[in-house]
Image (cartoon, rainbow, N blue to C red; front, side, top):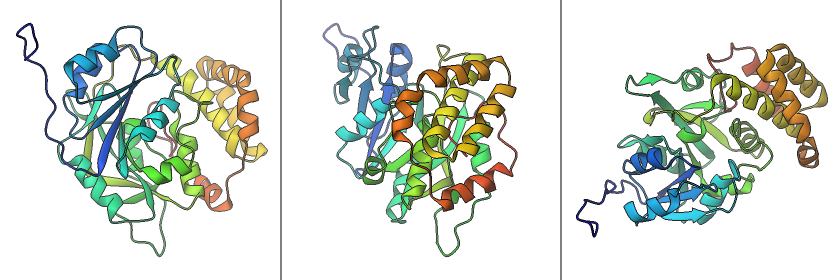
Length: 305
C-alpha cells in the first residue's frame, strides 16, 4: 500500500523470462498508467521528453518498471534506447495504449526460439472494446509472400505494427533499430526492409493478440495521412532506386492535401535522409513488387506490408 493508504497497482506475473517489453510514451500519463498493469514481462519505459509528470507517476505506481527519461522527443528512436537497456534475447514493443494478451508473449517467444532465422514476429491487433481486428494486421494475415525451402512458424511478411512486434534483440540492433529520420509514424517500414535485406525473415503469427485502445490524444486522420506520406517519402529515399522514389512522391502528391503536405515535410528532412541512402538488394525489391500487386489495406497503414 502507498503511504496514504491507497492500494498500489501491480502488474501480473511475468510469463516468459526470455522477453522484455519496451514502451515509449510522451505526455500520456493516464493511458500509460492504465496499460502498464497489463504487461506480463519486465518493462522498460522510455519517456520521450514528457512534461506531464509521466515518469515520476510510473516510478510511484510501478517501482519495478525501469524508467529511462530522455531530455527530448526522439520519436521511434526511443524504442532503440529501450532495446539497448533490455537484457533478454527477445524484446516486445507496446505503445502506452496497448498490451499483449495473456499467453501471447510466450507464444511469440516460442516462435522466435524455434526459428533461428526469424528476426521479428508480428501479431494480430484488436482495437477498442469491440475488439475489431485492425485492418493493417488483417492485411498482413493474407500476405502473398512465400518462403521456399524454409519452414516458418507463420506467414512471411515485410511489415509490422510497432505495438504488435517482438524482435530478436541481436537482429534488431544489428539492423540499426528505429532511426531518427522518420521518427513517428511510419517508422516500421525501413526496419522491416533492412531486416529482410540482412537475411532475416519477418513472420505474422496466427493466435497471439495485442489489444489496442487508441488514445484520444492521437493525431486525427488527416494529420496521420500527412505523417505517413512524409515517412514513405523519406523511407523510399533511403532505400529504393530513384525511379521508385519518384513514383512514390508522385503517388503522394495525387493522394490529397494531407499527403501533399507530407511530401513538403519530407523535403525538409532530406538532408538527414540522403547520407543514409543504401538501395535494397534484389530479393527485397522483388518482395515489394509482389506486395505492390496486392490491394493496399484499408485505412491508414503504418508499417510496410
